[in-house]
Amino acid sequence: MKNESNSNEIPKDFTVTMALMDLLPCLFFAGSCFILSGFIDNTLFFAGAMLCVLAGLFKTAWKFVIALAKKNIWILNRQMRFLMPTGFIMMIISIVISRDKIELAAIAKALMSFPSAVFFILAIAGIIMMTYYAKHGDMFDARMNWIEELTNAFAQGFVFLGLLFL
Image 1 (cartoon, rainbow, N blue to C red):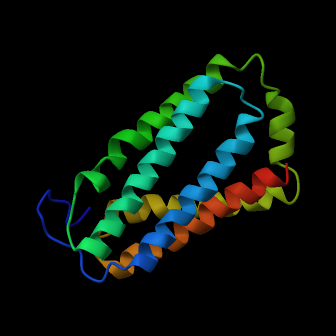
Image 2 (image 1 turned 30 degrees about the vertical axis):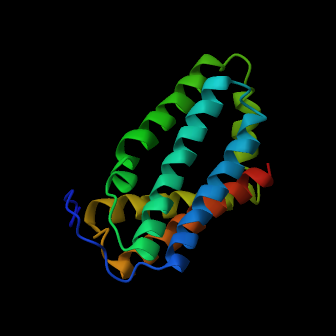
């Protein structure tokens, strides 16, 4: 990823609107985790999900600080590479631990049903695009940030919609 130094360089053209857009995927993800917690009744799942949400909120805070205070508190952005994977690992472990209580066959059948399957396919496409952006994008480029956030919002929105229609 380009421009990933711990310097005090301040990304240009970061706005409050961009920071608000960054908040949208966090809200969709939190809503999705709330729905999933109905299937996965496990404290570790909840804790992992909240760690992921917290990571997203810290990144949103990073953009707010840049937009409002014109400061780069880089740890608010860099923490994503630690908190997000830790949260997802906790969520996966909780699913493995709770697998006897989860009706995986019924969930798999529901995931393949219409319209949920369409939403999940679109979400997967968005997540693949986000992975590409993470490796090849410039996090200090406002245009690239808008592309990433719109893609992330759509991907998380499609996951949320897919879960709503289960």
